Image 1 (tube, rainbow, N blue to C red):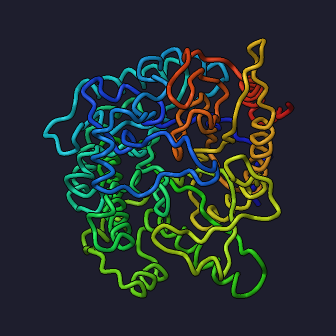
Image 2 (cartoon, rainbow, N blue to C red):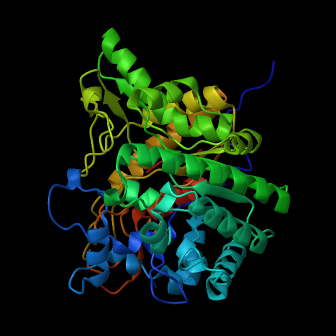
Length: 485
């Protein structure tokens, strides 16, 4: 009988994760085109718990392009485009041996359908990856993290069009060839199952351009998954050592009660959460999804050649973002649809100011679920606690709640590894403060490093270490053994 792990493996990837669109800024520099995230305005009104990116229409996109009064934070980020050398050096001080970021697609192909890539953009990522290696960080690179060139959304209706498959594959081939000796670990699409929320940000389908948005989203997912499989095929041909993974956000739920109806409804809901990873890891359409499409009357363009490439080019690993857990019930699932995911809060859990339930044990639970299902290496590509931070009069920042959140999740992660789950990396989200994805705020902070900017980009931009910086350093130095506050 084999020996089970007793803790984190020696070659474990301790990292941190950001996205280009939330950090780089420089939206109009270096030949970059506009991407879908560049039209997201700061959400400075309303309940924190209800802030999210809604569907976009042609009219709302055109308004954002003409708007001269509103503030669009992702156009400016934290100026990482200009400060990456200093920021990476500061992050390296924690001892992290890996770093996740994305390539802004619109920095490489400004319009998506350009005949040739933008050399200035390619050179920027050459320099960025070189700097990561200089600081002892293994790059983990996402090809598409809400950075689709806006022109693809406006001209081609985003992933709804099969033409986008070819544009994505050409983009992937370009960067695979360029960085074949600099990047080993790749994620094709960030949180590919995020389609009830963030769907325009993800799929780039203007809601007014299609007759049935729910059907159009699943057509977009099919086209996107086909493109991922084609990119995986090409990537392995360019460099057989590439590890090319797929990523989901953990949207699995538990039944609200043990009533048989709630248990069954929750099972059906979870099947459609597993659908995306089933398709890209198992390589074929599961029966439950086919029945779902048939019952909804969806007529999807799924071609034999698509099914062949999906079957032959599955993902090398599964990446997961994990923040919170949810429940569902037979009653909540009655509203399940194009913009409703049937999710309910777990009444037994505390939550952040933004309503995100805190459930460290849930991380161990879902890691076992996923590994039992796929038997593939797993990377925690995002995990973190978004909250307000206060700079004290002496310049210190005591983010004890964040440390407690992360500590309990690292404990749960260690226990999952002891269960036999093959987890190869852990990447806390936003190790340096960045613009929030869902609300475009700076005040919702995740970092070990504070960035002195407010929701409107005002401030010095100064970087300040929080208490969590030294805590994470101790965690890494001990390979996950020292979790003391």
